[in-house]
Image (cartoon, rainbow, N blue to C red):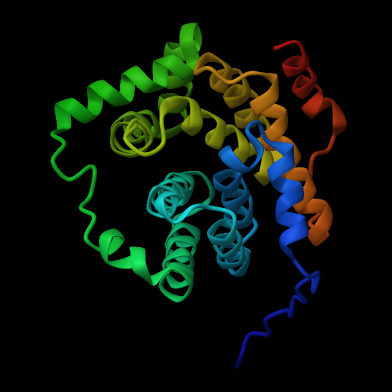
Length: 254
Protein backbone atom coordinates (compact mmCIF):
# COMPACT_ATOMS: atom_id res chain seq x y z
CA UNK A 1 0.00 0.00 0.00
CA UNK A 2 1.53 3.29 -1.07
CA UNK A 3 1.29 6.45 0.96
CA UNK A 4 0.08 9.43 -1.10
CA UNK A 5 2.47 12.36 -1.10
CA UNK A 6 0.82 15.73 -1.65
CA UNK A 7 2.17 17.64 -4.62
CA UNK A 8 3.47 21.14 -4.06
CA UNK A 9 3.70 23.50 -7.00
CA UNK A 10 6.68 25.83 -6.78
CA UNK A 11 6.28 29.47 -7.58
CA UNK A 12 7.48 30.01 -11.16
CA UNK A 13 8.57 33.59 -10.55
CA UNK A 14 11.66 34.49 -12.56
CA UNK A 15 14.64 35.67 -10.55
CA UNK A 16 16.79 38.00 -12.63
CA UNK A 17 19.71 40.35 -12.11
CA UNK A 18 17.34 43.20 -11.40
CA UNK A 19 15.97 41.36 -8.39
CA UNK A 20 19.43 40.60 -7.02
CA UNK A 21 20.35 44.26 -7.50
CA UNK A 22 17.29 45.15 -5.43
CA UNK A 23 18.48 42.80 -2.67
CA UNK A 24 21.92 44.42 -2.82
CA UNK A 25 20.39 47.82 -2.24
CA UNK A 26 18.66 46.69 0.97
CA UNK A 27 21.86 45.99 2.91
CA UNK A 28 24.66 48.31 4.10
CA UNK A 29 27.50 48.49 1.59
CA UNK A 30 25.23 47.49 -1.30
CA UNK A 31 27.31 45.56 -3.84
CA UNK A 32 30.37 45.63 -1.62
CA UNK A 33 28.45 44.40 1.42
CA UNK A 34 27.46 40.99 2.74
CA UNK A 35 23.93 41.01 1.35
CA UNK A 36 24.58 37.82 -0.64
CA UNK A 37 25.32 35.63 2.40
CA UNK A 38 22.04 36.70 3.99
CA UNK A 39 20.13 36.12 0.76
CA UNK A 40 21.68 32.64 0.65
CA UNK A 41 20.56 31.99 4.22
CA UNK A 42 16.96 32.91 3.34
CA UNK A 43 16.98 30.69 0.24
CA UNK A 44 18.39 27.81 2.31
CA UNK A 45 15.85 28.31 5.09
CA UNK A 46 13.02 28.16 2.55
CA UNK A 47 14.50 25.14 0.74
CA UNK A 48 15.13 27.01 -2.51
CA UNK A 49 18.52 25.52 -3.30
CA UNK A 50 18.02 26.33 -6.98
CA UNK A 51 18.18 30.00 -6.06
CA UNK A 52 21.51 29.54 -4.31
CA UNK A 53 22.81 28.57 -7.74
CA UNK A 54 21.17 31.64 -9.28
CA UNK A 55 22.62 33.78 -6.50
CA UNK A 56 26.15 32.61 -7.22
CA UNK A 57 25.69 33.32 -10.93
CA UNK A 58 24.85 36.90 -10.04
CA UNK A 59 27.69 37.21 -7.51
CA UNK A 60 30.08 36.09 -10.25
CA UNK A 61 28.94 38.80 -12.65
CA UNK A 62 28.99 41.52 -9.97
CA UNK A 63 32.44 40.73 -8.52
CA UNK A 64 36.07 41.08 -9.49
CA UNK A 65 37.78 37.76 -10.21
CA UNK A 66 40.07 38.34 -7.24
CA UNK A 67 37.04 38.46 -4.91
CA UNK A 68 35.38 35.21 -5.95
CA UNK A 69 37.31 32.75 -3.79
CA UNK A 70 36.77 34.80 -0.65
CA UNK A 71 33.08 35.28 -1.38
CA UNK A 72 32.62 31.58 -2.09
CA UNK A 73 34.22 30.64 1.22
CA UNK A 74 32.14 33.21 3.05
CA UNK A 75 28.87 32.02 1.52
CA UNK A 76 29.73 28.38 2.10
CA UNK A 77 30.52 29.11 5.75
CA UNK A 78 27.19 30.91 6.14
CA UNK A 79 25.29 27.93 4.73
CA UNK A 80 27.22 25.61 7.03
CA UNK A 81 26.47 27.68 10.13
CA UNK A 82 22.83 28.03 9.14
CA UNK A 83 22.49 24.24 9.01
CA UNK A 84 22.45 24.16 12.81
CA UNK A 85 19.53 26.59 12.81
CA UNK A 86 17.27 25.37 9.99
CA UNK A 87 18.23 21.71 9.57
CA UNK A 88 21.27 19.63 8.64
CA UNK A 89 19.77 18.15 5.44
CA UNK A 90 19.21 21.69 4.18
CA UNK A 91 22.82 22.47 5.06
CA UNK A 92 24.06 19.53 3.00
CA UNK A 93 21.86 20.43 0.04
CA UNK A 94 22.69 24.13 0.18
CA UNK A 95 26.45 23.55 0.24
CA UNK A 96 26.12 20.96 -2.54
CA UNK A 97 24.12 23.41 -4.66
CA UNK A 98 26.73 26.10 -4.14
CA UNK A 99 29.55 23.76 -5.18
CA UNK A 100 27.59 22.76 -8.29
CA UNK A 101 27.15 26.42 -9.22
CA UNK A 102 30.83 27.14 -8.62
CA UNK A 103 31.88 24.14 -10.72
CA UNK A 104 29.71 25.26 -13.63
CA UNK A 105 30.18 29.03 -13.44
CA UNK A 106 33.57 29.69 -11.84
CA UNK A 107 35.59 26.48 -12.24
CA UNK A 108 38.83 28.40 -11.82
CA UNK A 109 38.30 28.57 -8.03
CA UNK A 110 36.97 25.04 -7.53
CA UNK A 111 40.35 23.39 -6.95
CA UNK A 112 41.26 25.81 -4.16
CA UNK A 113 37.88 25.30 -2.51
CA UNK A 114 38.06 21.52 -2.77
CA UNK A 115 41.49 21.57 -1.13
CA UNK A 116 40.27 23.50 1.92
CA UNK A 117 40.66 21.62 5.19
CA UNK A 118 38.22 21.76 8.07
CA UNK A 119 38.66 24.84 10.22
CA UNK A 120 37.54 22.82 13.21
CA UNK A 121 39.28 19.45 13.04
CA UNK A 122 42.19 20.34 15.32
CA UNK A 123 40.09 21.69 18.20
CA UNK A 124 40.23 19.90 21.53
CA UNK A 125 37.23 19.54 23.81
CA UNK A 126 38.45 22.10 26.33
CA UNK A 127 39.08 24.70 23.61
CA UNK A 128 35.65 24.15 22.09
CA UNK A 129 33.97 24.48 25.47
CA UNK A 130 35.86 27.67 26.28
CA UNK A 131 35.29 29.49 23.00
CA UNK A 132 31.70 28.23 22.81
CA UNK A 133 30.86 29.60 26.25
CA UNK A 134 32.61 32.87 25.44
CA UNK A 135 30.67 33.37 22.20
CA UNK A 136 27.37 32.35 23.80
CA UNK A 137 27.97 34.78 26.66
CA UNK A 138 28.61 37.65 24.25
CA UNK A 139 25.20 37.03 22.70
CA UNK A 140 23.14 36.58 25.85
CA UNK A 141 25.17 38.79 28.18
CA UNK A 142 23.57 38.93 31.64
CA UNK A 143 20.94 36.38 30.58
CA UNK A 144 23.49 33.64 29.77
CA UNK A 145 23.08 31.52 32.90
CA UNK A 146 19.28 31.70 32.77
CA UNK A 147 19.17 30.68 29.10
CA UNK A 148 21.50 27.74 29.70
CA UNK A 149 19.55 26.65 32.76
CA UNK A 150 16.26 26.72 30.88
CA UNK A 151 17.72 24.60 28.08
CA UNK A 152 19.19 22.17 30.61
CA UNK A 153 15.89 21.75 32.44
CA UNK A 154 14.05 21.14 29.18
CA UNK A 155 16.40 18.39 28.02
CA UNK A 156 18.13 16.62 30.90
CA UNK A 157 21.07 19.03 30.42
CA UNK A 158 21.72 17.95 26.83
CA UNK A 159 20.58 21.11 24.99
CA UNK A 160 22.94 23.36 26.94
CA UNK A 161 25.79 20.86 26.54
CA UNK A 162 25.18 20.60 22.80
CA UNK A 163 24.83 24.36 22.39
CA UNK A 164 28.11 25.23 24.09
CA UNK A 165 30.28 22.41 22.79
CA UNK A 166 28.93 21.76 19.31
CA UNK A 167 26.79 24.59 17.97
CA UNK A 168 28.88 27.37 19.46
CA UNK A 169 32.24 25.76 20.28
CA UNK A 170 32.56 23.88 17.02
CA UNK A 171 30.50 25.93 14.62
CA UNK A 172 29.51 29.51 15.41
CA UNK A 173 32.63 30.61 17.30
CA UNK A 174 34.89 29.94 14.32
CA UNK A 175 35.49 33.48 13.02
CA UNK A 176 38.10 33.12 10.28
CA UNK A 177 35.50 33.35 7.51
CA UNK A 178 32.45 34.82 9.24
CA UNK A 179 33.21 36.99 12.23
CA UNK A 180 31.09 37.30 15.37
CA UNK A 181 29.13 40.29 14.08
CA UNK A 182 28.26 38.55 10.80
CA UNK A 183 27.44 35.28 12.53
CA UNK A 184 25.19 36.93 15.10
CA UNK A 185 23.18 38.61 12.36
CA UNK A 186 22.94 35.29 10.52
CA UNK A 187 21.47 33.62 13.62
CA UNK A 188 18.87 36.34 13.99
CA UNK A 189 17.93 36.20 10.31
CA UNK A 190 17.57 32.41 10.30
CA UNK A 191 15.10 32.62 13.18
CA UNK A 192 13.24 35.56 11.62
CA UNK A 193 12.99 33.76 8.27
CA UNK A 194 11.70 30.62 10.01
CA UNK A 195 8.85 32.46 11.73
CA UNK A 196 6.34 30.55 13.84
CA UNK A 197 7.50 29.61 17.32
CA UNK A 198 11.04 30.72 16.42
CA UNK A 199 9.93 34.28 17.23
CA UNK A 200 11.22 33.60 20.73
CA UNK A 201 14.72 32.83 19.47
CA UNK A 202 14.54 35.61 16.87
CA UNK A 203 13.87 38.12 19.63
CA UNK A 204 16.81 36.90 21.70
CA UNK A 205 19.12 36.91 18.70
CA UNK A 206 18.09 40.41 17.64
CA UNK A 207 19.37 41.69 20.97
CA UNK A 208 22.27 39.26 20.76
CA UNK A 209 23.41 40.44 17.36
CA UNK A 210 23.30 43.98 18.68
CA UNK A 211 25.65 42.86 21.47
CA UNK A 212 27.97 41.63 18.71
CA UNK A 213 28.06 45.01 16.96
CA UNK A 214 25.07 45.15 14.62
CA UNK A 215 22.82 48.19 14.55
CA UNK A 216 19.63 49.35 12.90
CA UNK A 217 21.14 49.34 9.41
CA UNK A 218 22.33 45.73 9.52
CA UNK A 219 19.31 44.31 11.35
CA UNK A 220 16.69 46.00 9.19
CA UNK A 221 18.85 45.43 6.12
CA UNK A 222 18.84 41.66 6.71
CA UNK A 223 15.10 41.71 7.41
CA UNK A 224 14.49 43.68 4.21
CA UNK A 225 16.46 41.12 2.19
CA UNK A 226 14.27 38.40 3.70
CA UNK A 227 11.03 40.32 3.18
CA UNK A 228 11.84 41.08 -0.46
CA UNK A 229 12.57 37.41 -1.15
CA UNK A 230 9.34 36.30 0.52
CA UNK A 231 7.36 38.90 -1.42
CA UNK A 232 8.91 38.01 -4.78
CA UNK A 233 8.52 34.25 -4.33
CA UNK A 234 5.11 34.35 -2.68
CA UNK A 235 6.44 32.70 0.48
CA UNK A 236 4.00 32.88 3.38
CA UNK A 237 5.78 32.85 6.74
CA UNK A 238 3.77 32.66 9.95
CA UNK A 239 4.53 35.82 11.94
CA UNK A 240 1.29 35.82 13.89
CA UNK A 241 -0.03 36.79 16.32
CA UNK A 242 1.32 40.26 15.60
CA UNK A 243 2.05 40.95 19.27
CA UNK A 244 4.71 38.23 19.23
CA UNK A 245 6.73 40.33 16.77
CA UNK A 246 6.34 43.89 18.07
CA UNK A 247 9.89 43.80 19.49
CA UNK A 248 11.39 44.25 16.00
CA UNK A 249 10.61 47.96 16.28
CA UNK A 250 13.13 48.27 19.12
CA UNK A 251 15.99 48.14 16.62
CA UNK A 252 14.79 51.40 15.06
CA UNK A 253 16.52 53.30 17.87
CA UNK A 254 19.82 51.44 17.42
